[in-house]
Amino acid sequence: MTPTIRKILFYTFLALFFIGAPLIVLYTAGYRYSFNGGYIVRTGVLSVSTTPRNVNIFLNDIDTKRKSPYILKHQIPGNYTLKLQKDRYRTWEGKVEILSGQTTTIHNVLLFADAVTENLLEVEPYAFSANPDGTSVAYLNFDHSWYELWLYDLEKEKSSMIGRFSNLEDPELVWSAKGGYLLLHDSTQAEIFSKNGTAINSQLAVSAITTSIFWHPSTDNLLYMSTTEELLQLDLSAGSITTFNNVDAETILIDASIITFFDNGTNVELRQTVQDETSLIALLPRAEYKIAMRDAEFMLLTDEKSHIILINIHAEQPILLEKEVKLYDWLEDKDLLAFSDGNEIDVYDASSHNTEVVTRQGAAISAIKWHPIGTNILYTAENKLEVIEYQKIAEQRVTTTLIDNMEIESFWIDEDADFVFLYGTLDSITGLFELALTR
Image (tube, rainbow, N blue to C red):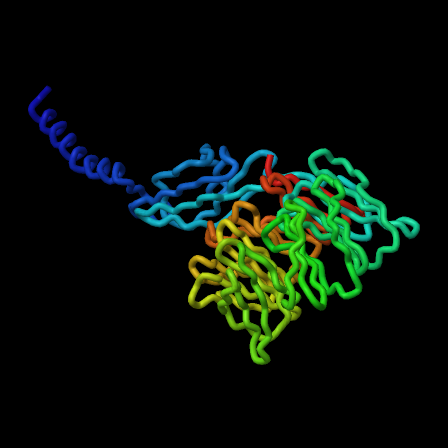
């Protein structure tokens, strides 16, 4: 090899080193050439996790050949359409922005099963009531002056008649707070059953002076009957009846304290009495209130004018929220209240005291329910059952239609969030339906 050739090779390799070394360093540091922009940019990262797992990840309709959970590194910054697909599940699609030198997180995406709505029970009852624990439904049929009370077991998919009654006037079916007991009553009689349909001898006699019968808002075994003179508390576990004299009709015993509403002519005083010592919890606008929910810290009140008032009974400023609404649902383990005026769904976070608009609809919203894990809200509007994300995962909240063209009167979700059950009419069939949410 001649000296001239050696010099040429030396300077060639030297040039390649000075050109290639920085490129290698830039590549290792996450820089790439953007063919769209025509320049070198620092890449970003996209982190994706889903329920269920092993979901195929697509960016701008290109299969990344990766499955969730996965961290996609060295992505050119920009706006992308992210699709998450899995066999027998509905596709999730949202707009995401990947930023230079940053990680975009798309976490806790919940995919729903692509399932067919199945009819479990064809029935058009006089009254229909779902157990709050999601295991059964009670319904009342009217047959030639007789009312037949039936219990349908959702797991066994079997109906059984648990009672037959006559001379009922405008009867109602009401489950206890956690679904351990079922109450059938009208203005003249009351019958109580366990969740499996066994009749319970309550010794509770409805009289002409009875003004209302209602369950405790959180304790499953307590039933109340108010009269013009007193309030009776029936403890179904102990088989005892306690009488409270000279109290308001909406008085209730909660956690060894008596909660009362007292109208002072200007406001309604929400009072709490513990061991004969009475304290004022809050001053409320004048109205007739009911306790719709009570847990360890919070109390939700409703009145006859469709107002809700959320109260923290331990706070110096107890009234957290006061709204006129048509629908609401409280998620106890996360202290979240979803509510709607019929066109808009909002969520109040009792821990941060923030209210956020989730969605506005052109069609009237007729029902709302939290998904048990608290990431999504199910709602019915215009013969549809849809589910929307509570928190924005992508640039916009993603809405998924679960059922279309069904007249839905009511729906609920089982505790494990495996199924949603609906009562309504689909394809000219009225009754109880089931839709799988997961597989």
